Length: 143
Image 1 (tube, rainbow, N blue to C red):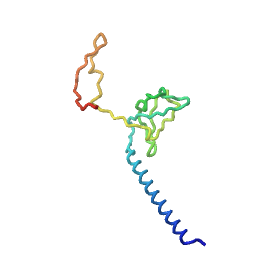
Image 2 (tube, helix red, strand yellow):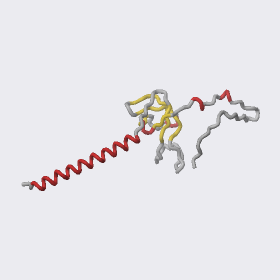
Image 3 (cartoon, rainbow, N blue to C red):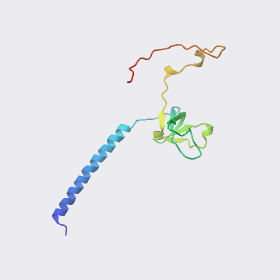
Image 4 (cartoon, rainbow, N blue to C red):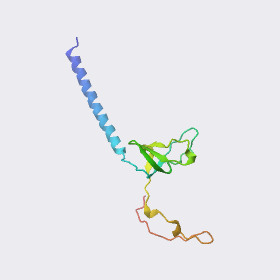
């Protein structure tokens, strides 16, 4: 037979554990919500590909402290499911599987005002050009 006081202690411990689990779940949800980013791509969008230092045959860049986090932008060919995208990779990356998870892609934001058309740059015979000031960027200095 189980004594009533042992039963009462067990019920109290279950209540405490349940409260701890609720608190933990709440903290994890908050952490997830803060880090969550709504990201969605369409076909013909461009995305940077996040790289990870790996040991093996294929290496994107040199290893080291100042290695790049993302490599050049690639065109998105197809959406596969909700969280995977197929990229158009160059022939030298033919050994890499072209389907990537959305978490390792970063959207390329192209500002049309920053694009300089080639015909607007006039190069003289000495292969030099004249720089023309377009705008001043005034901001607070960080100190």
